[in-house]
Length: 274
Ligand SMILES: O=P(O)(O)OC[C@H]1O[C@H](O[C@H]2O[C@H](CO)[C@@H](O)[C@H](O)[C@H]2O)[C@H](O)[C@@H](O)[C@@H]1O
Image (cartoon, rainbow, N blue to C red; front, side, top):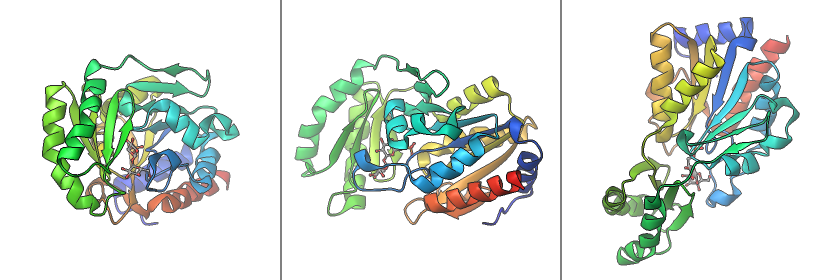
């Protein structure tokens, strides 16, 4: 693990000096869980959960900021069954949904009609492109089309991009590209908004955020803006992969996937314990 920026090293020192003023944020897929073909089987790894739990008891708050529905992230992360994660929240579906470990309550707003309408058109659209094997993931406020399990995943993703953008536009939705998935989702919030909401609530002096994908870029930008304004110190962690390098240039440290994230969090927990 090599933190490449002065700002990142300053944030690490600040967390060690004052963990109780730190907000720890993590993406779900590709950070807490390894990428697998079936999204329903993307369980968070014991390594990342164990490491996050070690930090959870020391910091102000742990927040999972994800494109997943909050309920699904809690289930796949077993977040309601971890002693060290009593301060945890999930900001799901890019901040539209929320779950708090403290109360166990879910906040799940009504979905715009456009999502169900667009989802109903997807089977015919996919058949017309000879891509009926693409996986459709219905998430209430969003519907995703996955190409990972197709014979040419990248080629299929490319062919789907324009037709899905047209479909999203007709139903008042926005597209959200991810790792071999294109989502058609409700407009109005992104992970950057989720960060601002958390910062207003927790008032941390330091933020640590781990992400892996395009959907994390607004969060990285929000954290960098807060850091540049002097409001917080911040450490931005890229969970690296061969599949996506969009976060590398805006990160303070690049680690090797979820296992690398776990190693970094454990190294920090070791320093806090020592
Ligand atoms: O914001 P995130 O927590 O990173 O969620 C983004 C999307 O991730 C999921 O898809 C990705 O992970 C799957 C399971 O490993 C994988 O099969 C897929 O190819 C990846 O794109 C998830 O299914 C989506 O709903 C999330 O929005």
